Image 1 (cartoon, rainbow over the protein chains, first blue to last red):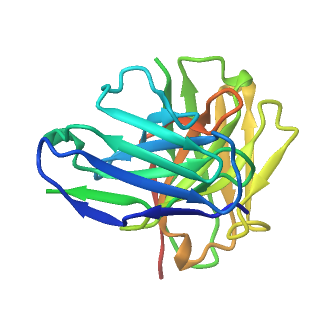
Image 2 (image 1 turned 60 degrees about the vertical axis):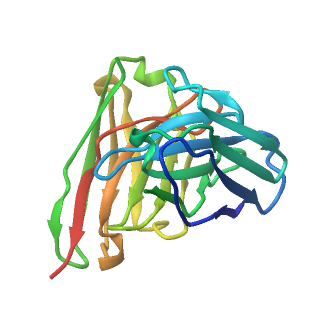
Amino acid sequence: AIQMTQSPSSLSASVGDSVTITCRASQGIRNDLVWYQQKPGKAPKVLIFAASSLQTGVPSRFSGSGSGTEFTLTISSLQPEDFATYYCLQDHNMPWTFGQGTKVDI
Amino acid sequence: EVQLVESGGGLIQPGGSLRLSCAASGFIFSSYEMNWVRQAPGKGLEWISYISASSSTVYYADSVKGRFTISRDNAKNSLYLQMNSLRAEDTAVYYCARDRPAGGPEYWGQGTLVTVSS
């Protein structure tokens, strides 16, 4: 199975900051990567699919980049509602595999 | 509007069985691949099972292979997960999730909690 290594596991930031989260795949996955946001007690929500395509309705301050084995999620100007946990997922090969998650807090 | 509503969770003793259901609406259920994903308390997301639109292909995570069975009834717009030989480590919120075309989970239900404890 493809392993997804996500870093950092947590970070502290302030409103208005720019933050970057990284996911590394154990083998090349082209651009088959999804980023999710999850708030406590809620289901995950898609932010980015195909590594860099913004899901409909997601604010443009979220962006994704990368291909092959290294990917990043950037939040350009953190808003109060962005404090949450973020996960990457590779949808290149079964089994789908998630990164360990990154908790973004104040 | 796509809606996925899970049910069937609860408290079950180790070794017991439980069947989860997911009722789908707002899309043509028979056209989409579906998954079950779980999240143990305070932990990350774990994909556990996939089923193709026609049920011809299924996959399982190693952690549940041989114990869990995924199925669907396209006439009833429903997805199921039969869970047998449950263990304490199966305690989690279980989500059903619809795949994007040729991609991973896009729409998620609200989840149902399964607690395995004596």
